[in-house]
Length: 299
Image (cartoon, rainbow, N blue to C red; front, side):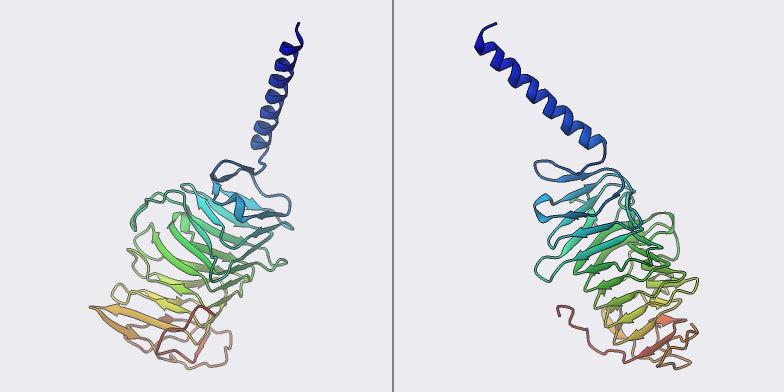
C-alpha cells in the first residue's frame, strides 16, 4: 500500500475513534457543547460550573443535583427546559447573576406565548438544608404547574432568593398555584423580587407556605389578583417592607394594612390577615413597614 493511502487510512481511523469517544460522552451524561448550545443529560454527580461560553444550556429531562454536589451558574447564562422537565436541587445551587447579566431559566421554545399548557415545571430545592443555595438576579419564566409544583419550590431547606424576576407562570388546575411554594422546615430569605399576578388562577398566591414553612419576605414587589381571591402571600411568612398591590379596572390598590391581629415581631403563629379590600395577605406570621410605592429592585 502506498504511503499516501496509509496516511488517509490513519486519518480516517483517528476521526472514527474521536467520534466514538464524543458519542460515548453524550451517552454517559457528560455536558458536551454543540455549536450553539450545551445539552445536559443525566443527573449532576460532581461539582460543575455552567459557563457563559456554553450557553444556552438545554435540559431535556428532569435532572437532580445530588446531595453534597454544587452547581454553579455564571452570570448571563440561559437555561432552557424542554416540556415537563425540572431541576431538582438536593445539593447546592449558586446562580449568582448581576443586574447587567441576569441568569435566565425559561422554556426551550422562544415562541411560546403567555398562555400554554406544555412547558417546563420548575426548580425544586429538596431537603438541601446543609447546603446554602442562592438565586440572585435571575429570571424565572414560562413554566406550568404540573403535579402541584411551582416555578420555585422549597422543601425542608432555606435558600436565598434575591433580586429575581418571575413572569408567565400558569397553574394547571382550577384553583391555587403560586410562584413560590415553601414547605415543611423551610425559612428561606425572599428579598427584592418582582412577582406578578398569576395567569388564569383562582385563590392562588405569589408566595404560598404550607406545613409550617415560615419564609422571611423582605422588600418585594408582589402583584395579586384581587378579583379572583388571590393573595400576594399566604400560609406563613414574616413580611417587612413589601409593596403589595392589585390592579382592578385600571385602578391600583395598595395593601398598607398591618393585619389582624397585629404582629410586628413574628411569634410563629400564622394568623395575621390583611384588613385591606381586597386583602394582600392571609394567615402570615406578621407584617411590618408596608410600602406605598414600589421598591427599587436594582440595588
